[in-house]
Length: 166
Image (cartoon, one colour):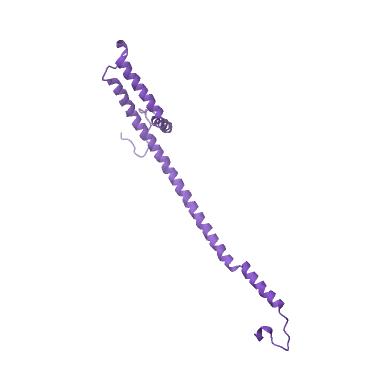
């Protein structure tokens, strides 16, 4: 009988191992971070030096990797074959974080830009409103005119106004 395509497939036994991708990603970042340190280079140099010295000058019965050091080459190749994908995985995770952070930064910049534009409009409105308000210099000049008028002698009905005489 043919399988029905309108129903989900029943889960069968899983042949692949299950792992937590997030935990594996964190582990790969820790390993990649360690591989990029001077400490790793010192450890690796010490390891290779001890390996070569032991297999070149150690007791003949205890040498396990004679001169062309084939086993050492295999070990270093194996280490490199695991290190490269782990480093790439760590870089991909960092690129994803950078992309998300860039998006958050872009949104924050847009909000800041809109707030700056709003404040600019508010300041422009205040400047326009202040242009319509009497300034200190304007009030001072008006008070001086009033003071001058008050200091002038009052005009009489019989004679012309003192300003008109000029």
